[in-house]
Image (spheres, rainbow, N blue to C red):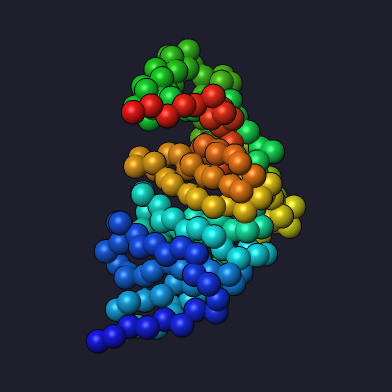
Length: 222
């Protein structure tokens, strides 16, 4: 069987997920603003991802989820998509930054456990406040209290809009020029991006922030 996908313009980049077991999709970035997902099992287009305002230069699948795709466009934007849902869920913003990288996961877990146990031994809740005495049920007001003894604010349970759907964040850019390359670390914690603005940036995937790592003084050695 010969599979031939006709694209709307010049193809810049294609990628397949190294983790996928539930799909056989090729993500394609082209001159067109839409990212196309091609199903090699059926030989047809599965669907498209819309959000970029210019051609899509590079695509990269997550190393921690077979459903997450990262794309970089000529518009300078880097978008994160869950291909099972409509719209991207994160747009990276170069103005949002944090200094340095996070500690390793195991180290952070150990610190968290120690601080939690100390707080509990002092009779505090996880917010650092004294624990409220538990009230017995059976009151006549019919109000269900939260674990902290407070009534949730109105609209507390409403689903929040993800960043890709908020107009202010939807226009954010990761580079001043086109995004020409993307690479996610094997542990899925960081994303390395390159742009036509002569910049390489390292992003914290969890927070979506630029780590401000300076690559200007890096030199290549044999």
